[in-house]
Image 1 (tube, rainbow, N blue to C red):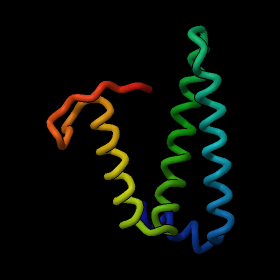
Image 2 (image 1 turned 180 degrees about the horizontal axis):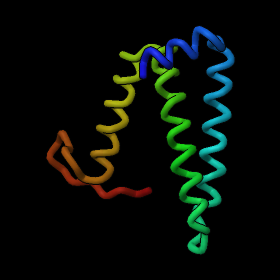
Image 3 (image 1 turned 30 degrees about the horizontal axis):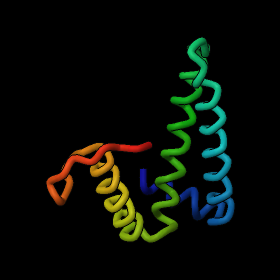
Amino acid sequence: MTEICRAAITRFGRLAQVTKAIEELAELQRALARDIPPDAPEAAAVNVHEEIADVEIMLMQLRLLYDLLEINEWKERKLERLARMVGIDDPEGEVREWRG
């Protein structure tokens, strides 16, 4: 998969792939918004699945374009924060209430 992503970046260029990532993220946002109503048709969920796949492919390319170590550090910080918010693995041993 990495080889395919590198080839896409080489062929289309950094700017085009960053722009494409923005487009795919917007499409996922729209698909999720259509899937929110309780009476949303099954096709709405299928579209969400497709758009998640598109976004994941673009995220693979973005990881190649940006500093992966920095991304992973930020991801770890964000997951630690989320863990504290939901009362899991709090470094102080306290369970905190999540206040959304």
